[in-house]
Length: 372
Image 1 (cartoon, rainbow, N blue to C red):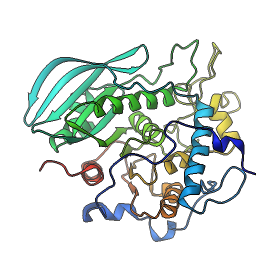
Image 2 (tube, helix red, strand yellow; image 1 turned 60 degrees about the vertical axis):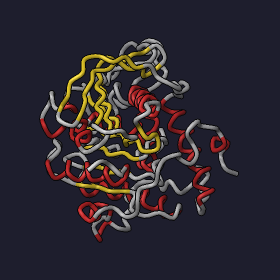
Image 3 (cartoon, rainbow, N blue to C red; image 1 turned 60 degrees about the horizontal axis):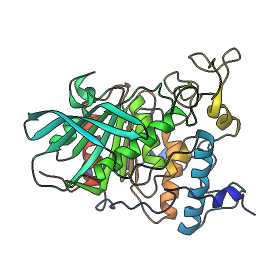
């Protein structure tokens, strides 16, 4: 018999209510949906998400929906259950400015019960809509609108100029909900919950198409965007810029072990020190238990199916990450779809003009049509 955890109900465990991508991806990015020939059948050391916890195989779409619920139950169980989503999050509008064909406005937004984020911008293209939209997440909101850490991280303004409503949201990774002393959700999962409420906010706006909302971010923002897109199935697409898409203790920046991501031990005043786990500074929290149980983030990627996603890889996510991504390709094939998983690569962690061009084209395809 399958484990009873498979029948636990998770709010977003079933078929996503999102728009389907319009056919095959455009020629300019089609190559990124195919692994190199030598990696096509390489699934690495990762256990297939197409196996139930009891080892029985997933053979049909109906099987997959049951398995998807099993995976969601595991990950939420380890990281902490989310509170109910906010049906219509509050928004307070502040200073407004016109930037060519885009109206940019400071906003304060409700992201969790009792929590208001003041570091946010709403960008709206000219025209009547309804528009596709993208949530952009990072340490602070200025970078994504072109006022912070480098022009190649300005995803929100660039996407807005291409016809997307964008919501740029900043967030400190050291955020413990409801307080550090009473924290019951791992910080990275809590930020994913906040992003889900950002979706709720955008979906409530009359000029946004609720079936065509995606999410993106770079580095820490990439981690945040990945967890949000995978755990909340109303996001129609996701693009994650070099977050480290699997656990990898050979790379210090793939640092899910830190207390501000997945290594927090609730109720302990003293948390582990910063750095790669070792004998003197061991793994802690859900991260330790996941590693002990040989779980990895390819299981989260699989939750995206059949929604499309792009891993915009750099130093932390090289071409070899296809070994993990091939598992998502296999899940999509069970569901009868292709061209849902893409990987671009670049040498450096920072985005490049080429990687950003692919990311913008990806969203134009996955969430289009957009204003030309």
